[in-house]
Length: 174
Image 1: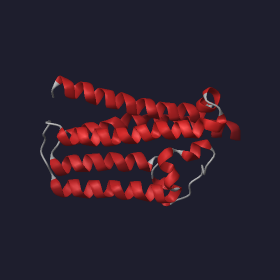
Image 2 (image 1 turned 90 degrees about the horizontal axis):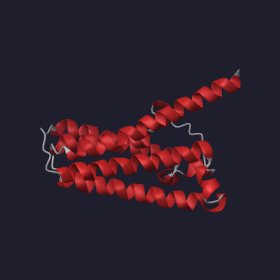
Image 3 (image 1 turned 135 degrees about the vertical axis):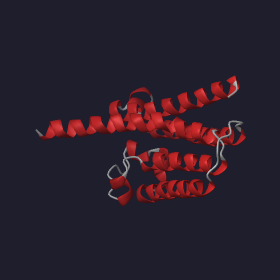
């Protein structure tokens, strides 16, 4: 990989990680309410998340033009990519379109009883991750694997937050 590819991919990973960290900080400490005020907290967060979705587009464009070529496995790639799209769409259907901007963190629905959320803790992230891996397998373009790697720290942080939440619930029950 060229040095410019490494710098670009590192900045995309850092930006995605920071967006997820800010959301978790708001979940735990009401970060936006403290610094911006409850009235504008969701609007500011929606703007930041919109930027994160633009990052996803940027990652996709970067991956498409990446010169990092690997072996393609088209049948498996189609299967994995379709599974990723299915999981993502199913997760959005169960929460509603406001899920794309994390509205539940700001007073929307917080308890989801759908089957996708029973199987996977964060199916939207998982769906996008599978989509990137699937397209990487389909095309043999290594940039898509790098794009998928940007989501791994986010999933890790979300799983840590979920464990923290479960421990608090256990502690409150005793």
